[in-house]
Length: 149
Image 1 (spheres, rainbow, N blue to C red):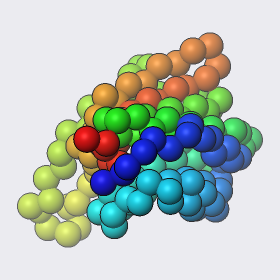
Image 2 (cartoon, one colour):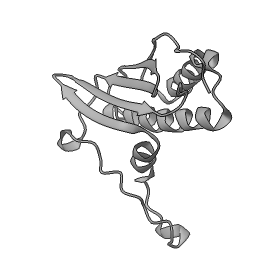
Image 3 (spheres, rainbow, N blue to C red):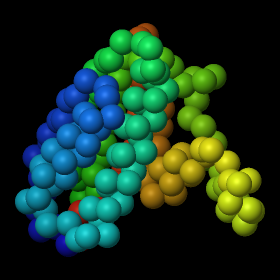
Image 4 (cartoon, rainbow, N blue to C red):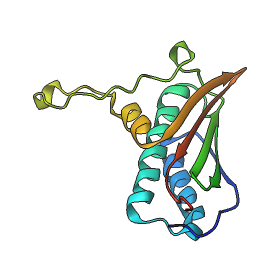
């Protein structure tokens, strides 16, 4: 477990698939001092990869200009508080997808194309909230890792 609180930090990229990889690497590197275990690091990487890939694919869809994605992290006693902002398209209906669990008890050809990501995000992260402010999307969540007892 972490012994002390890490200072807040930010990772900023321009939306692209390659930039998502860079952001994940930089984010995980910044967490080095709190000594997360492999499972905690994997949880962070999975949640952030899903969120960032959704932003690249849906907020800045193919054919539209690339745009900024800013990830801010504040380490508190109850975990990592993460805020992700972008200037892309808003979420449909201005709300988070439900993130219902998708049934995988079907033939391989009948598996749905998507739907796994938001379930994983909402299952692994806590306090997940979305807001659209003027021209900016903001997703906030808490990852219960690096907890200080």
